Length: 181
Image (cartoon, rainbow, N blue to C red):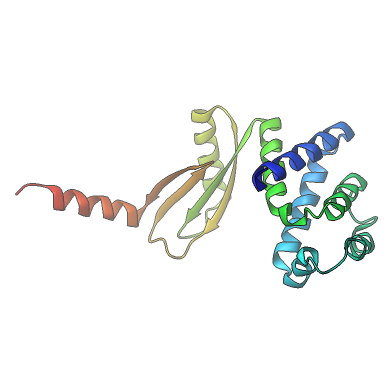
């Protein structure tokens, strides 16, 4: 079984569990926060992924760190991941859980890169415009990319819309070189 298939199945199982308990948002937020903590903290990530460290030791550390601090359903899920040595899929599970959440709420994540930070009004305008065209609720996640000269680069799922100034200049250059004089 491919790794993404494994992560997807675990994410679906967690989502069904969260839905049954009525805590899909809470568990999603806590899962994302825990995943972000693990990804940013190299010693924690190395500890969880180290094959030479026993399962019991990892489970005790997780219990000490998380018991009573995260939702009980998520805690049990993370313990199962540790027990089955599936911690390496945590980031993928988190991403697939977010996809399940998006399907449930009929929303779509749009990742936008810009040369300067977008204001809340600009993000809302972009979201409402895309929402009208795509007939879904749009969640804009904006980041600043200092390498962009201007314009926007939007990623919706696997599709990238490059409206950056650099891309426009490249197209113009290509058209000028192609033109017959």
